[in-house]
Image 1 (cartoon, protein in one colour):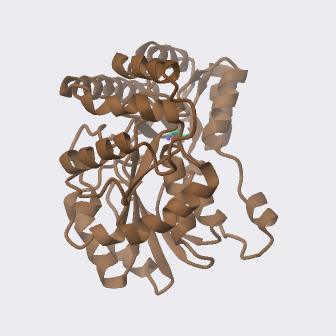
Image 2 (image 1 turned 180 degrees about the vertical axis):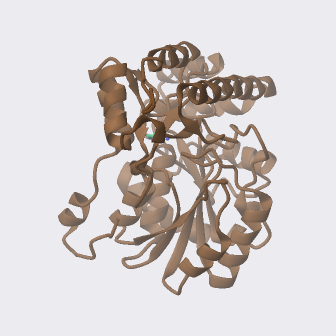
Length: 388
Ligand code: GLN
């Protein structure tokens, strides 16, 4: 997608299409389809968080919090970053609570990408990244994740030039489920250090890793000062509607992010910030069980898709499966429309994750409650492959 280098902001916004993921959710409602498009976590929210939210509402935590987020929550995030991610950030100056990871990403890009700056995105990409770069008048540049789920180091080197301002990294990766390896992260580190490039790393799925290990890029030597680490609570605690995430970055980078955050949102929802202070007390068992739950869902959907005639990619993390639809003789849009209208299952067409390509792919989400997954699989038995 070529951004429009114009000072006419309306045209720039008009050139961005609406989110296909969220459009599919609306279609799912319209056709009463099982929604495997937008990632709705089906795993239960810890009871202590629900009780804490009710308490927060009852106990007058209903007005603005300070702009950067409740101090107690920032301290909790900073301790989590230390223990889980091996990152050292000062809660006072280097952590900001945002309205979900989406806002952390948008504020980071608006703060640091200037008109004409190039931003490297791994393709397929989560669909918010391109509009974020375009809204900042930056230029998205794409590099592929290969079908063997590896990055192409040689191709990446050819995409870097003196206009390259930043790389957006997402590990575990939406939509492929790729978990970036230490070797790949070291390669990205060397590239960024040699070429003075910033990395915005979206780690929202950090707790959903089935194979391999989650590594935060900022923990690699030389990357702390070049990385904005973003994450959130939505996926880990099944609270996507609470809209609470965070950005962590060294002061010089954070100062600018805070300005965008301040003037766009004022603050994240106070009662939910208060409730999420309890998140750090959730016992280790919770994370273990959640992982087992999603692993079971992955294995179930993966094998079901294979037997239904899809060619799915095996995800190592996050909660999505990309699947090749070649056997159904339709492009991704026609197939997704057929699936939602005639079969009653909503998925996301592959092209929404690509600048070019993806029309032979659709994305399934397996985070939904198990009954929904089973119902979707049973409905899809009515699908006919090309050869049938
Ligand atoms: N990240 C989720 C997905 O890819 C939800 C997207 C959204 O609408 N924020 O489905």
